[in-house]
Image (cartoon, rainbow, N blue to C red; front, top):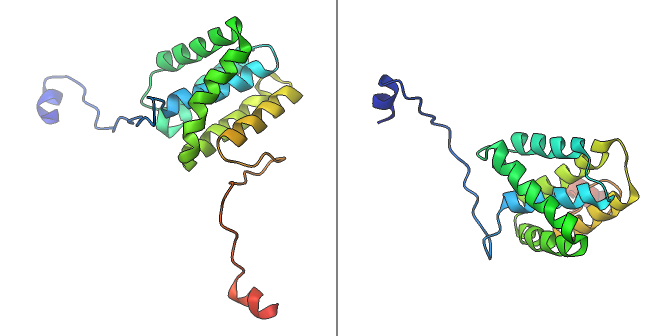
Length: 168
């Protein structure tokens, strides 16, 4: 069928479109990703234009989000930003509801934390409130808050190698 359409001058993409499978209550990766980025961007009390651009860049490079147009991403981010203008406390609670279900999806959780970590210096200032918010997001997603490395909560302890056991 695609070859018939191609002959007629209609471009057909064979690239698969990512499907955002929702978990409990219709919350998907895009919603959680945007909510976490909005929490970081608003945690210092000011949304900088560079933070908005960086979120758009992350969404365009994140493989799970490449199927979404930039307008969908910008609309989702604008909706979150509006929540923070109206009531920051309620906006944080609403964002947390969107982020927490991603704790069950380790790869997605890791992608969210990594994007948040890179978003913090986007405006040229690493604000302590942004670091505290990153720790909150990491806890919501099942990571230990620490000073850099991602540590998964509940990960099995590493078994020592056979050589280490013999040496001990």
